[in-house]
Length: 141
Image 1 (tube, helix red, strand yellow):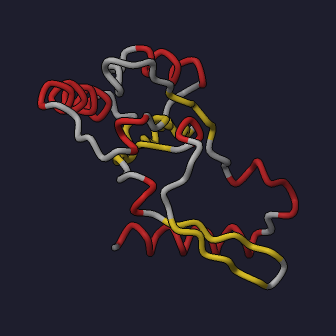
Image 2: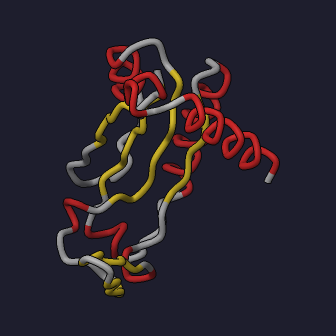
């Protein structure tokens, strides 16, 4: 089972305040543990929303909204993708994580990633083949 582990943003992360060497070291060690355990698929930190944009869809219209975005508690500061055996295993690993936002309360969200079988009959054999081709191509880049 794959899960996206989402680190919620804070006022500091949105202000562009970089993590300390101590936190970078702790997170580097934690990521190394995840990799050695064979569950880490990928991970990255995200720059503040002030450097991003959103595209709102309204029928055929596309509206671009530049950051920053107001609701810090709804923003993402970073993420991992893990391949684990269960939600409980993901929870257990998250509980071992260093506090990603030292000096403040922090929150990490755990969300399952859809698998092909979750989509049922609507995900036809042709669509499955297409997805496999896309994933194979993405791995090459």
